[in-house]
Amino acid sequence: MLSGLTIRGRCVLAAGVAAGICALVLDERDLLRVAAFVVALPLLALLLSSRVRFGVGARRQVVPPRVPVGATAAVELHVTGGRLPVGGLVLEDDTPHALGGRPRFRLDAVPRHGTILEYSVTPSLRGIHHIGPLRTRIGDPFGLSEFERELADRSRLVALPKVFTLAGLPAGSGLGTGEDGTTRLRAGHGEDDATVRQYRHGDDIRRVHWKSTARRDELMVRVEERPWHGGVTVLLDRRSAAHRGSGARSSVEWAISAVASICLHLHQSGQQVRLVTEDGQVLAGGAGPSDGGHDDEAVLDALAAVRSSPQRDLVATRDPGNGHELIAVLGETTTAAVTELTKLRPQETRSLALLLDVGAWNGENGGGFDPWQTARRLRAAGWTVVIAGGPRTSIAEVWQRLCRETTSPDSGVVT
Image (cartoon, rainbow, N blue to C red; front, side, top):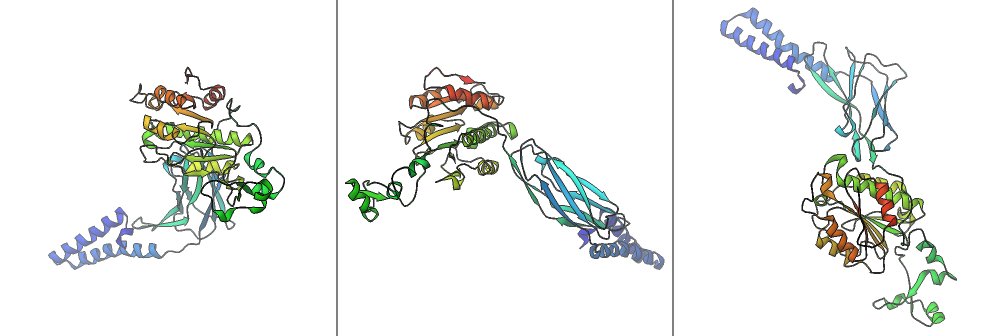
């Protein structure tokens, strides 16, 4: 209960107790009366402040609720009318450091129809930020006591990664050419052609489709669960050990922005995109367009919420591209990581990589990681590789270089 006393209130209370002790020692009744009054004053103020009631209410609205990093969002506080305490009301909205300082407002009166208080926030870091709660402090006119009240709960603001406009598609790949796999799956002459495939060793004999088997004169089985068809897989290497730098200018943030730009560019080209992390976790996209394969918002929301992984080594238990074309945005990649990436990839399947020279994000010269050696190993496995040479590297220029590249060993670095 005494925690509601301000410093002034505690000093007055301590002075009253000290005066009472002196009055008892000196046997001074008048001083004892004064001490009793001084002790009672902060306690009475504390009691009245804790029971004060006022009808002020508030709600918060963030417009828009999703903005790119560096863009501005407006925050509106709708305050409804009510009886204010003596001396007015001070409102403080709790905002994270990435959105700027805490705004404060002082209200001497609230109109009967209410009022709207506005301020703006500009996120400097990607992520999901929570604004609030909206707090006010209720005290007595003498400043002896003070209580904190919450008028509005938290609101969410999603800071999306920056997206850059890209042009073109990688030369020699299947991107943008031919029909989408989903379309090809539906091609044929009837439902049987769209839902059956050739029998493979290990298939359950109960899944044999006898009608198609008789017509084609070979064993055919039903496809009960449609796999990923067509499109492209984009891989994000989010390992904290594979990146350098901190904050918005770190290499992992550059990689996330590059992945966002690539995914949205492929969507605009009519491609179905499957977004995965280095450990195989699917962030967006799946078995069809309903799983976010063509959804820009699903990709951006997933990348806004993604966090760095504490995993040090890159370990692949399956083909990261799921048997289809792969575009990987990689941080520091060791020889063992290259082996993990390439050991399960089909040789005939196109694989592309944006390899970050992460030492440049810390101002290091090499720093123990040689991106050229990693690039040579990936190219030897049939990958097309472009190296991004630092935090000022243009994502659009890196993508253009990747679109022009072949698997020749004399490929350069984009700085």
